[in-house]
Length: 328
Image (cartoon, rainbow, N blue to C red; front, side):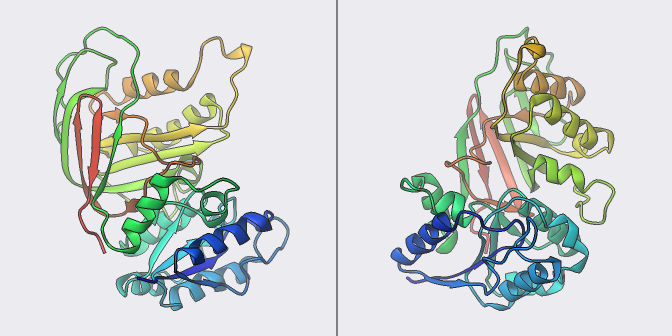
């Protein structure tokens, strides 16, 4: 069945026109109707047009009646225009069936939308980076996108990252969910079950930039997923510290790390790496499980995640599942 996909650019300018064209061609080859916003390839400084141009593009996407409004790319630009977005119009479009999908800088839009209206959007692919690759797009990403298009997606499963050996932790199960700890790193549940928790989050740097603003959702008892790219582990820790000291992290039922990639360690680190950050965070959040290896982020293999939807989280040994049922 043909679907209507609307392509627009709310953040950085599209510099890689070839990947943009490949992405459009691939979606069309799948039989979809692809509508390209009039300003999708606009350029102003580093942005896809000036602020008013990008705001107008968001509102055209909301008025398009498309099945999916898909960003061309992330980058930077949404945080500076958050006050100008007509959130009620976007939420109304979502209620009528338009699914807003994106990643990276799109985190600002998604969390602001959630904070202002409670509407659900989807953390997922972008046109150029995911559909416009020189090689064939990732099969898992494509399958998850199809699930969204046809209302078939019910959840995502993955294997948790392998943890370094550690002394057995005391049996201190999170009060919000049922958990059983076993041998392994502190904070790693051997079994965990959490129900009716709001899934939210996205790019760590963007999310931290929303602290203290009206655009950060006040989620208590949620499941917070995080990812980032090109951020050294010490910068990741600093961003997490912002959320920790703001009281955000301790109020969640679980923290789920997606993919953190693109950084390079140096001799100066002396063994300080991403696992060091995870271990530190678990030490700070003794009653909140911190899980790893969710297939989401600035990587080819990514699942789609409903930001703002109630979900269930289940863990048995290294098998983890996020379940949300048919959410449309």
